[in-house]
Picture (cartoon, rainbow, N blue to C red):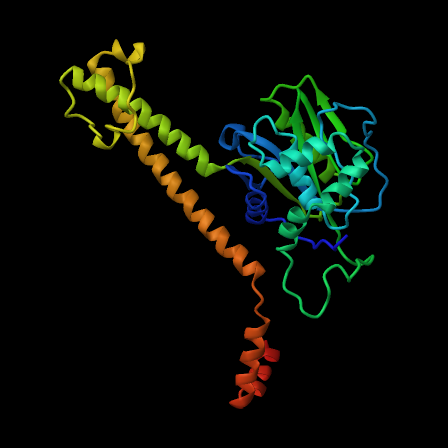
Length: 346
């Protein structure tokens, strides 16, 4: 199998990986603190968490399952450096009921469920599209072949694991383990994130107090998609209220003509049809205010996506030809020695 590169633990990188595989309306965000994590409502719907930590040779104490839910997709990691993609796939392929998986990932899941966990890991490694999109984030390096430099005892080696909720159970999925780790069962969909955070905190406590190299990412529904869905719901509500206002002869207040054709309904909702005029106007005012907030959120989401796209393009770009050309021109103009002396003084 071809070598796999290490990739950066960055939400923009993971989001582009997801989109490159054809998965829509799913994105990755960073969770900055476990002491005061974002409220679940601000992240919903949550599909899972990816935790990055420094890998050590210490023996693992967690009990792994040898027999588990046949619909749970767990794959052993048999490909070096594939843990980031494998953690992401662990979340996507175990949320098949909530995420619209493209045919390639759907087939990977259905075929993999018939195999043992080791063979699933091999199957992921043999998937050309997944490998190529993963390796597209390899830093340009013309002098050393990707994967040829092996880690030594002095190097920091990092590992990704996934946390998911499936069928009222919370799991830790670590491809270096023999099976999934069951963190709890009979857990509600509202409480599972607290259990995952507890386990992540427990992992952090295994390290010395001066160790800070951890990273936690949440895989969730796209903020852009959530904002668009909320905007549609607001416009839908406004249409009903606007029609009611017109029927009462108070249409001069808060009228939005752009709603006229987009949200044609066959009948009024009863709670609006019987709503007093003063409450209609009050509710319309609140909705228009909320709509402005959602529009600002949409602008922010679109700007964030633009910035992430630019960052990823810079990650992939090879700047060496530019640097060589810069040195060449500096040498031809007698400035190379001057630049060198200026650099070493700093």
